Image 1 (tube, rainbow over the protein chains, first blue to last red):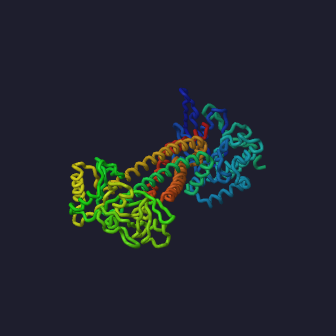
Image 2: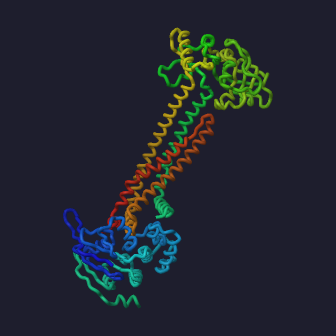
Length: 234
Length: 402
């Protein structure tokens, strides 16, 4: 569960101050499916970074699964990122010299998990994301959709409670994009909290809850029960 | 992160920037190799000089013609003195200084020694029977040089083992006549062993009475005089007595150098050790230069892999882990370079030993480890700054978006 209240973040570009987050209050239940939309510069990426503990708000409070993240030091935040949060990026951020399998293994490797156990866990994920045949390919030998699936594999290998996706289909063609969306929604159905930042109305509309941002503030936030559920089921 | 994974991850990263890695490897290797080769040269020189004098016991005093004003420096090897030391003076010393038991004047030169159709260029030592006692040389066959009056020449010779083999093979040498320049000498003895204490030289030498050698080379002065101090006499006092007597004989001119090898040796030892250290120090500078190279390469690596650093942080790598990654990269390449340098250095030293067997080239253990330690140490020190830079990167900035 995520509880954000009264969070502000200001950047300084030269002399002018940019209010990237303006008094944000947000409560996200475990297993929620949110889309965050808004024009460029509206602060949605900053919100995502803040929720992902990549960025610190200037003030306010942010509790993640009962932990007050404002009081944590950098190492503790890194640990929380590792254990609770998965990131999916628009540009995948795969390490080019590692194979698909090794990229997925990376968080386990950093955490010091033994190779044998890593292998077993990654095998399950490869199977689940239907990229087992591509396990030994390097990222530049994979299609965009496959790369994003590898990146998703990497984001869930530590079994996080939240998945933060920043324009996950932004670099993909429609077919691959649909496939990636389906995978993310499947994961959400299994219980992971899914937060998608997107420009794409089609994708944004699929979420159960729509958050819109404008000039660093949340301009609308409402629940939506519509065809997202029906589509994915069918 | 497990060590195996850390090393594997680093090797993958190094392989990706192969050219840079190889250049760095070579730079570090050169530095370590230089330390190893240069200290081996220094140690070789020291060993060579020490070996030259090591045969002389503690109770020996050596006199050279010529004088260096500063004490403790190198005594002149070649007799360039205004006045030579003569056999008569040696006789006077032996008669008048009670602390001396035996005196071995020496005349040295090179000359062709032949038997039948075989000829060898060899070292010629003109000396007396006392020489064999002072040098503790063993005779394998026949006898040493006879006890003659100093000024008395005689056509007899003792030859070294190697020279004997080269001239006579397995045939009997005793009683044969060999030719040295225009003189003929009858072989009366063959030295035992290869003359270990003096390198290989003595086994290739021919020994003749000192007066005969003076005729052969047409010289008057002596190359050096070795003197043995009688038991219960102090070497320093005898040295002074010899010095003063020579001064009297040379009309008050102090133009000879009298040293006790013991004191001389320790001086040499000090000088040559300092030389080795100095040379090693110069070589070590190249390692520091390599260290700066390490810093540059690591800096480049950090800049190039900024997005990767951001990603690692996003997926939960703490700052220390990111720093470790880059330090490992530097340490790994420095270790590989150092090992390469050690290998090449040792090969060069072995080659040197093969080419110049008389000079005991050898890298002391401390230089090996100092070279290795310095290489890895400087690499770590110089890589620290860029690695720290990587560790401090804000993940958001590193991922290239805000």
